[in-house]
Image (cartoon, rainbow, N blue to C red):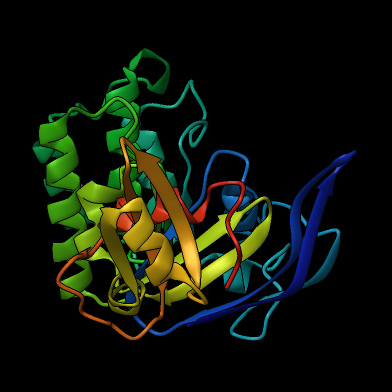
Length: 285
């Protein structure tokens, strides 16, 4: 599968949700779609799922426009944070409708997941807790086996144990049936090991799109005295720096490693890099 966005814009009245977004996702992999609240992630995912049209620009899935095109959207499953299912439906109704909509639906897997999450088929959607609702969404997303499966903060209300179950189930499902999975999350440290690629949106624009390995390897954390670090940072591509009690810590991007005994070098986690990269003063690269 191939997703292509070219100069994609979406405006809601006076709010510009996406600004000239150009990005390509393709192949079978798990991609982390990251960004602060309001960065445009959910808008982009809903455009992909064909929920509405962009204001301008292009968005295609395998060279087809997803909006109002069932031959394309039947291969895309979007599980949102909220409002996935009609509240008067029973869980069984949701599964039956999903099995009719998604051609690759795996009922045996759906039944197994119901047992794992301890859900009853006859329970009504409007009686479920937030965690149970999230579990229903996870079941539909995994059992759909859509070539493009998108999860937007799918674990709201799930405790740490069930979130861990979800990550394990997601990876097992992907290994059994490789496909393009997009996962938007704020719990980056919990899932960073799943991502082959990471795309970060910031204020409606693409901040970066890299493999996870390159993203982490290209960033170094340098720490030492303020004077020593400031001297080292001259003419460097500095992403972030902070100072406390005469000590300075800085993050540099894609710079040759210059080992100095008076400086300490380390690698940032993906969570740390996300925080550094989305600060307002960030210089895009």
